Image (cartoon, rainbow, N blue to C red):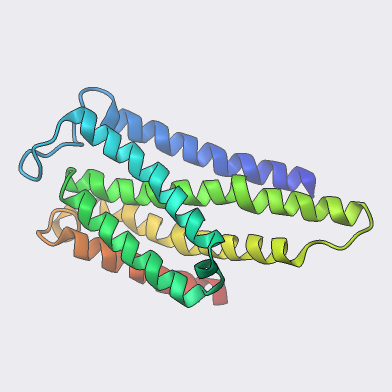
Length: 201
């Protein structure tokens, strides 16, 4: 079990690291080509990079704080609040960054939350439960519930990330549209519905 968890941890970590490396190569290095669109917002490259990295960090912190708050114990209420926050981030990014970059950064927020869930919440909880079993004790059911819920939410985030990646090949119906933030918000919602059916299958 420990070996499986070890590889699971590094699979998640390497996925995020490779994704962040691509984000740097595509948008942060080389003068921010593709990150800034003067027709959208007259913003400096440094500020745009700061917003890009800042939204990744803030996304995880806000999500985690909500999850450990009383709201995190009410799945439906959490989903509603989380979705409204995602729509706000989507609107904000599409009105500050290049639309394609905004879409990618929303996906990167999901990816960052997913890998942070694995490294900082799911696997540590599983390690403590395994240690309790090895010591002949009973695992903390709260840890099991927390790990299960975050794992479930990772599934719900994974499908919209796939949709966002695909959407980058169809600018005419996604980020290239005038109301691109609404389209992305709907894609995320459709992704959540699809993830729900995938979990049932």
